[in-house]
Image (cartoon, rainbow, N blue to C red; front, side, top):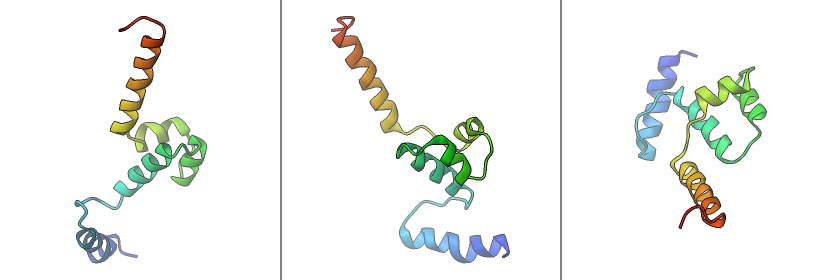
Length: 88
């Protein structure tokens, strides 16, 4: 398969039909890794699915933080501080 044919004849037209923003086929790896991490799939499994041998490299390269995850982490810390009387 010719990569430019896949990109130009399938990927880009599909994105346009779905009303999605322009992205490269390789971006799907990042999306896939991030979505699996958000679903709490085991990091070793994510690395295996992306064809990587090192979990740390996979998490650094292919898994991107989600805004919701950052908000959840801030809420957890806030609750800990309030419950321990360190913050009001």
